[in-house]
Image (tube, rainbow, N blue to C red; front, top):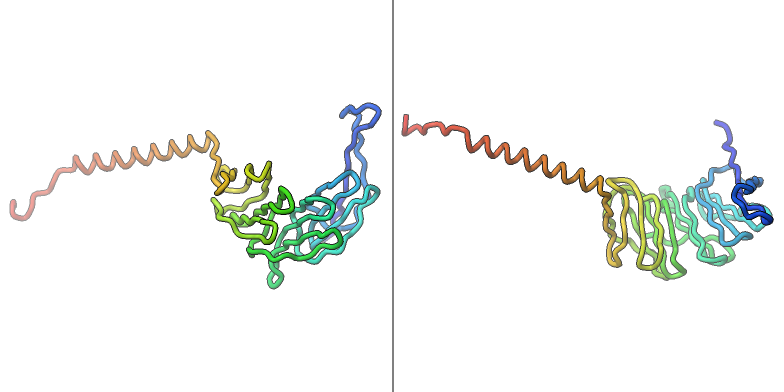
Length: 229
């Protein structure tokens, strides 16, 4: 098997025009051979990317470089609250638990995770409010002190979470529709018109079949009893 080649691209507008038609795409040397799954920029001079084998690389405004990682499990999502506070989540392996790590401004460190299921996405509102989602409907929440399991509306995989605010949150994933919204107390599915129509058609068919079966039974002639023979 060949070594994967990972290329980093950046797109910027020319300052003298500001026209997207004049945008310039440049490439930079990647310090890792591993696949990268998520990138987050704190500013134009500070960014992070994570990937396979616990890979973590950082942008300093000039170049990307490797940063020591506390895990060898693949990291699938990274989110930075600010330059001194950030989170990354990912897969897990036997004996090591799920990859859930935090940046404290100096180093990345493992944090206790309340689930053994892989985590695919993490999003933070601030240092005291954050959510992560993952395998088989897993949802966990950060309260500023610890991560806790939250009741999920599905057992299907959840691939991404986005928080507009502390009270407005969305999750997407597999399953029918795969779109869920936070009500303030629980996650509920947001069904599309097409799915609702499909459900209505199915219910109508079931009702029709039951009605037809009942009608046939009511019309079936009764056999004479032994006393009548």
